[in-house]
Amino acid sequence: MKLSELVAALEAYAPPGYQESYDNSGLLVGDDRMEIHGALLCIDILSDTIDEAVNLGADVIVSHHPVIFDPLRNLNENNPAARVVSKAIRNNIALYSAHTNIDNIIGGVNSMLCLKLNLNRIRILSPLSHGLKKLVVFVPVSHADPVRQALFDAGAGKIGSYDQCSYNSEGFGTFRGSENSDPYVGEKGKIHHEKEIRIETVFPATLQSGIIKAILEVHPYEEVAYDIYSLENEYPLAGSGMTGELESPADEKEFLRLIRDSFNSKVIRHSALLNRPIKKVALCGGSGAFLIPEAIGAGADIFITSDLKYHDFFKASDKIVLADIGHYESEQYTIELFYKILTKKFHNFAIHFSKVITNPINYYF
Image 1 (cartoon, rainbow, N blue to C red):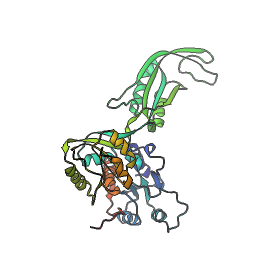
Image 2: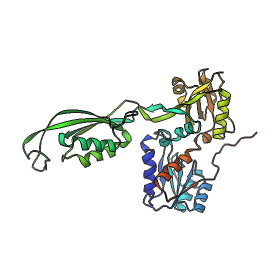
Image 3: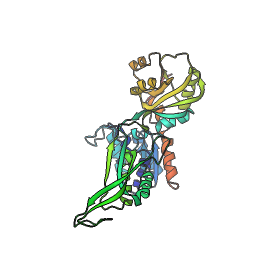
Image 4: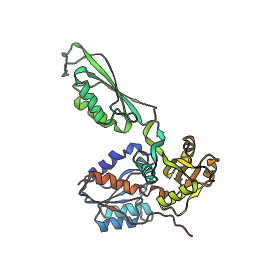
């Protein structure tokens, strides 16, 4: 199959538009027109990972962390990232990364953490505030139903647990076609009044091109009148971190043991225990210190993340338990997520889990 098919499957699940501004997710090396026969899944790409892909006959490596993160000024192989990129090019291996875009969605990296801890009632901890747009389109009464359905099929009209949401009002539109026009109704050169439906609906900003395409394919007018507005509303299906709840409260130390065993953490750094049960859990795979205020504000009993600095632990302020389980440990199940996405779409395509240990942190006991 083509590399473009694999990229499309991953980006349909985790749209690139959800990545943070500093990130570099996407196809980093390779031609999306190339034929591929197998994929290797990993968290980080090292030189040994390229060798592993070659030995397995994998044409593409799908990683969580992008190997090209900081700008590369050259491919001088004294630079570790440049060495990996150069080796991939020499072996005709494509490199694709899904990083913060797959962090920032329901069903993404943080959902995997919730799954491993058997959490219920999961929600985004810090929803995007610019993730939604509103569409207004004017349609002749005879075509309102098919246009509305096309919008819903393209992903518009979802609000929380509801779908196919829209507001519709009747009125009339006026227009006059020029000599170069081909009007669906009315006559060239004459003003025309037409009964129309004003359809309003919301949609995720990442779907805008598909939404517009859906309108144009079914709308009968030669020139379609529509407006798109950016909204300040929070988008509850995308954003940073996540919260969930345990079925029944757990003792703090028992829950720390559960975290250790679930993520194979060699050590858990944590703030002072508060001698109260754990019920509501906040978490963020990777570096999540910036979400400590949100975790406290959400009423979480514990916040699980990684890369906490010394002064970050003071922010617990006897309001929450902070638990640093390690960066790699908090994101390791992203590989399982990639596997789930790709095997659901492609049934006769070789997919391999990398056996190269890429966690750069070691522990001395």
